[in-house]
Length: 492
Figure: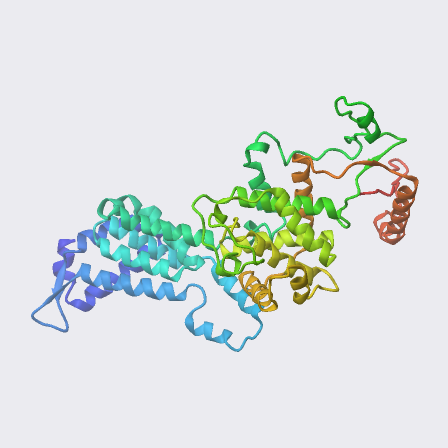
């Protein structure tokens, strides 16, 4: 290498060509990046005369640092949607198209060129060619951009240089990097982790109810019992015999069913379950205490003229108090049970999107805003805001309008509730009811109900009759004759 530096390098141009050649080969062969970094470490002291200043000299290391900076910026600008291509989105007026393009940018995969460049830069730091300051500049630029490719490249860079960088960097600076990564990860969770948007994500209220001491030893998500085996307490027997609860089983002659289905939930039972879910949200909220938005603060926007106690935010409401508040609104506005389930969906979506907690100081206005929005989205004949002013005598129409407007903004105007999400919340509410003895009472299947279910099954059988004809084979072998018999199934 010494012979090469003295004989073959006749000036700054030759040295620059060598820097570019080494960098290009190192990026093209990432598995040999450590070897090329060691080569750069040996060549870092090579100096030649500068082209701009004849009295000064330029070293291999200084040219390599400049080239690393240029390549890092060039590759960083290529990742995702650049500023030039981003201007093409300005004529697009459809917000959904813009959101989709931004989502594609966030979830885009980094190119191999970008990752290999970061790897070689990291290896140069480990070989003492690049200083600590260069690494901090790269990390800050990647954090500042914050898109998917930049964050993935940052994670790979930190995985490579973390141990050596922590030796020369203060703990406060490194913790600030990790805290920023944690904040970005929590803020930009994929949609499947949001229970109010994705059907496979676990609901928040069910997980909070499982942490409660009263139900700590109960398996809320246990395999649901068969419809053929049910617990039934005969009212007359319980009145005459004050003994233990007797277990009843469904048989060929008697089938026990409740009145609640996913398409027609029981109103009273659904309101009780939703109130219990809100109660667990309040009781098991985070201990650090998130901020309370002014629009939901009952001190700033009271629902009644009665004086609010000074320690109002320190006392959690009871489940009965929440139930009475929700029942009053639903009874006066004549809302349906389905609206109660959608209310819970909007409530959890608000807590997730706005990153707030529901507590004693804001639960009434959050629930009121969720009910107001759910009634307008779900019911064909929605209740006007002025009608709620008739129910809550001391609230103004202007306050209701502002509550609705800010609630929608915090939801990012995402009021869509897919049928799969609705079904998930319904069955999770049933699981919550079973764990807290709030299930609908089971009643024997009467002749009228059986005829109604049979009529529904016959109607479905007629609808899918033509579909089943296409699924049957036109001919079968006599040696392996299988007769397919279709039987109607009743699901309640």
